[in-house]
Image (tube, rainbow, N blue to C red):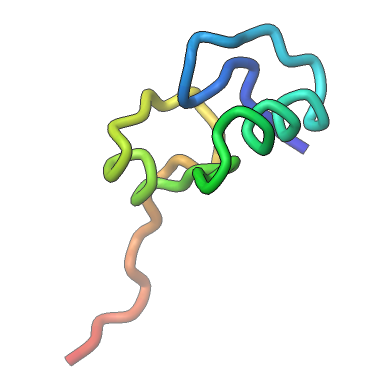
Length: 64
C-alpha cells in the first residue's frame, strides 16, 4: 500500500509504514481524512505528496 511519508496536516514526517501514518492522523488529527483525495486537498488547502489517490479522475460519463 502506498502511504504518505509526511503528515498532510502538520510538520511530522519520516513515516516508514502505513501503521505509523494512520496512527498519526487518528490520534493527532481526528475527524480529518487520513487518505485525502482531490476534493479534500482542495477543501483543506493541503499540499499534494504524489500519492495516486490525489489525481483528479476524468469523467467517463456525461450526464445530460
